[in-house]
Length: 117
Picture 1 (spheres, rainbow, N blue to C red):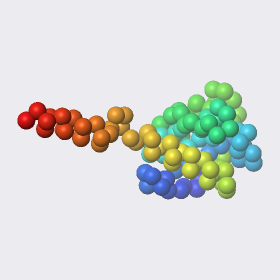
Picture 2 (picture 1 turned 60 degrees about the vertical axis):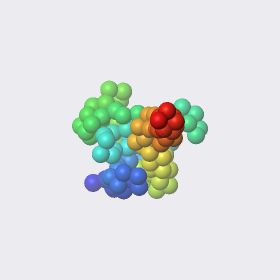
Picture 3 (picture 1 turned 90 degrees about the vertical axis):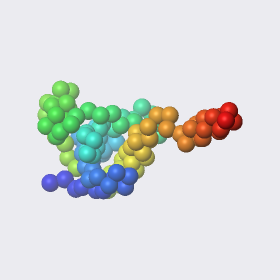
Picture 4 (picture 1 turned 30 degrees about the vertical axis):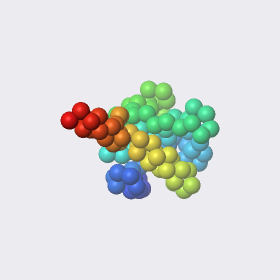
């Protein structure tokens, strides 16, 4: 089947599939993790985002078939796979940090309360 690679951040198995494995940069790229399927979107060189698109491979196939019913997904390997894995891992770390979760803010609040004792 497809090659699985450990996501260094989550420890989960990931798959990277694309619509043009011979020239992945010219096709669409999809990443599977335990969080679901994400499509790699590149607005401009160096500006990459991953958008959630499906919860299962069946849903993913339906999603891509809307644009092109004959599209086949194939495994992405080699250097491009490594690049996409690194991009996704870097962004998935930012997804896992809760907004406003800063240790500095509570410490400041705690200091203010101690001043009023």
